[in-house]
Image 1 (cartoon, rainbow, N blue to C red):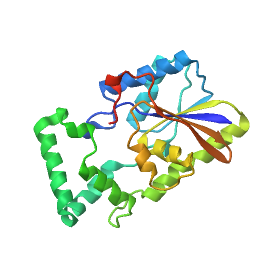
Image 2 (cartoon, rainbow, N blue to C red):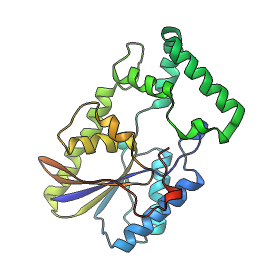
Image 3 (cartoon, rainbow, N blue to C red):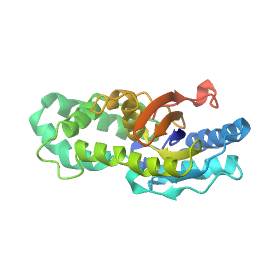
Length: 238
């Protein structure tokens, strides 16, 4: 049985520059690398999504852990495209749902008034939740990757990693990814394969550690969302 270490990216930037780590995110990620090195955890392989915030997290971990393997880029570990979901569905939901329109306009006004200091950059708002729910439910106007396709993409990484466990048992594999992919894998580790994975994704800290024990035909959740390397002031969700 091998262990898959799923690392969520560090804190990202504002809503206008989300696909890049903030200064806090870089610090979180560097501390993660130092922690892994201090614990003496040796990795035989590493993978990373192709989003900037995922790659930057891997770079900071490697800076804090000399000798950490260079990750193989794999776009299958990318987060779903919330920007596209908003771009395509926000105008439609504004027309369909007056409450969504009110929440959406209030969020935009807050962002305009407070700029980078707006609290809306660091929290999920009501309109965010409704937007994701519309995507998960399969809104007919959305033309991008569906929830079902996204879930299958993330779950499909299981076959790739299971192939490695057949070659060498008892090793550790690192994966740098995002909150929703980690939520899906944690749910699969408890034999849950539906949208309840989003409940797990919503509580995952930046630069956190989730460990899955993997055999070719079995996933088992071992640890979830741990951040022993982060002091309280550096524990963030978004």
